[in-house]
Image (tube, rainbow, N blue to C red):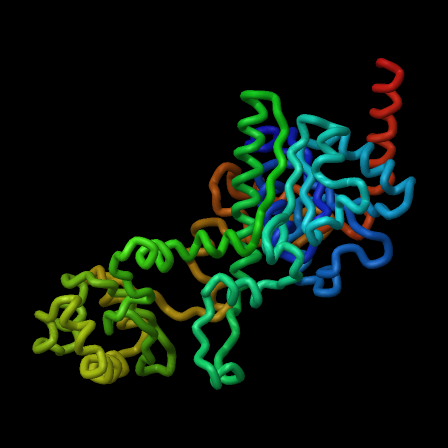
Length: 377
């Protein structure tokens, strides 16, 4: 345990699998919480079949194996609940209730517990019973704009945004509930919906039509906002989003003086005429030259990195975003949390747990604590 970390002394039991719950609990673990994975016998979290994915989301945690459908497994789980501050699960609505381990059961057992559920569409509503992974939830939240007839030709989203959004909201909700409990002593029941998270993220597209207000085009229509090829076969992004001074500086460098005085609205209206000339002008320069000049002239830009280039990026190194674990999995590297509460070199306290690695130790501790409580010690 890192005693100086914000969540030191907090224990989280996580039955959540795959991506949302593990990402949320990784953040909590990096902030000092003792996160215990409660996994099913045999294969555990299904994402273990992808070792790289499991490792990316489950450092700093411990693992116990319990059969929650058996009387002994259920009893052992409740013994662990006695030691916990938070229980997080990611099953379909109703699954935990059928095991008599839903929020009402758990908070009757331990009133100050924070019981958290992450599900596709939430615990209530006409879609609550639907199973849905990220793609389906992005589509339902209005995030996909794929023309009819072009379904097979359009790349699917690379990032599972519904998973990540719900994980971030879950982590924020948990620390907020812990703060509220510190003040009032009460636990909480938190219903985190992946769909709700994306609807929240879509606010800039929803609020304008709700109120009869003009919609800000996203991505911007500005021809200076896009991905461009360079002379050396690489790529660069420009992200001018209405900044006329950046557009003037860009045109000055590229020799497009007749376009320099155009305002954002004028550029938006003439995109089809401007873009071919802009692409041709940028293609005359190598990436390193463009990066240097755009930096000097304060033009918004960024190189297009591969994952391999990103790993070696000097900015990543300077910010300490990759940390090496020097324990049992010596030399294994992870991406650290970016919140800055814990200093570089202190985030990774444990490696990736083997399935059930800590079952005996944690259950012995929980059973001992229960006996002591029963005996009034």
